[in-house]
Length: 327
Image (cartoon, rainbow, N blue to C red; front, side):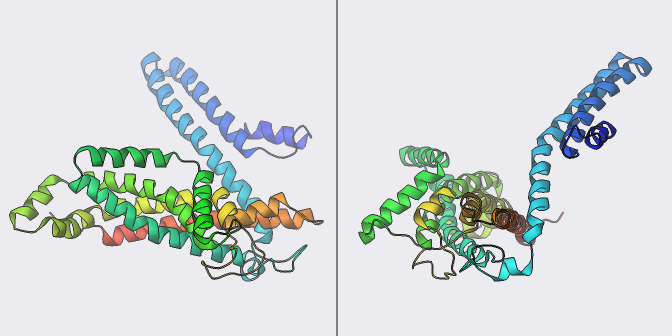
């Protein structure tokens, strides 16, 4: 299939060589050929076994292709502006080439960090209540509301934060970074609650009962036995919630706004974030369209690398703080 696509590319029938098409059609062709050859050589029973194995492999490759295509496209398009200038300059007074996304990177880290500081304690304590204390109608109502919040569109969270602060400050044009953090926390809390709840449920009851038998109070059992045992899963859930919201554009566009200058203060003035930076660079290009698109792709690549780094940190933290088991 690679040879076929190469011939089509060289003959001018295709504008570029399709790696995704090669892998996809090659995998499908492999499944067909392995079944046909195995039927002739090894018999029907072995051929069916190989066909099912090939179909599972094909399903895995097909599921992986969009991710590979996305990453390859972002990397290929984003490397053009992935330079020191991009990470050390803002867009202040820049109307063509040059400039960078330092203000957007700082804004993303500050807004997401504040949202995490608000969401993790609330979500974790809610999960502890549901697993360790919650009984009856109240627990069922909280579970139902958490499930409903999980499906809330992100723009609704942005409108909620905007309406809240517009009423508090009596300013219909209020825009600041902390409002964006509140909007993201509304989206993060249900993810933290559900993931933490499932991890706490996996802790064996025998560990709790052994602690109670030694006379340890319930709150100390939770803090010294239950949480350390499930810290790896909880950390992974928190990182998933951060990855869920760090790329949100609509709520930040509504309440945090956008600016071309540096702003380190979450509680004052507009604050740029990477998703909004990518959106504005792509949506509102100037006379030099290529420069704006290059910055947009570089911003997308930076956002992906931040999420990747957060996941690597989560794995490291989970490995370091997971309980050490010995036989």
